[in-house]
Amino acid sequence: MKPIRPFSNFLLVVTSAILFTACAQFTGAGGTPPPEGQKATGYDYQIAPGDVLNIFVWRNPEVSAVGIPVRPDGRISAPLIDSMVASNKTPAELANEIEEILGEYIKDPFVTVTVTNIIGGFQQQIRVIGEVNQPSALPFSENMTLLDVMIAVGGLTEFASGNKASIVRNINGDEQNYSVRLDDLLRGGDISANVDMYPGDIVVVPESLF
Image (cartoon, rainbow, N blue to C red):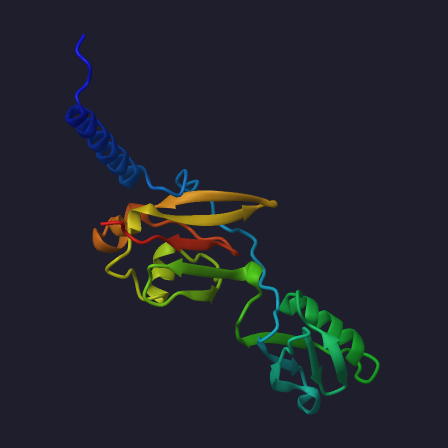
């Protein structure tokens, strides 16, 4: 058998590289596709530093308050409330604790806490990095999808390799990589490429090599 000539060897390498690139573009470089039919159910927002709260005490406007900032240390101050921890609590949990404090001064207080300016802790944010027009950290919202996220960050740049994008997701302390098809979704209008997002997801969009 004749030995492979250098030029033939070169063609073999180039052909293999083309096939590998084509396969990577088809399957995505981020890993397996996200599991279908799974949503972040039972999601309860947890207050985080930087959020702004409204505290309404029924029939007691003098101890109600609006525009209460959650300080970097996670605490708040309000009428009859001095430096109370609010971070990592749901609005309902915080309202219950405020009721216990106000119960020393008011008979049967009924408190409602609402978050008017949501920042969200890192574990509740969706972070988008790489070749998007506005790399951002977005507060997670229930039923948020990949399309919602991409609209919020202004879509892909002209240099993006959208079908090689991936979602990095932490599941019970185990980091998983899922491939997503952003070119198909945003440029091709293929709604089947849309997927549900989870709190804490990171969307990574690489640069195209060509």
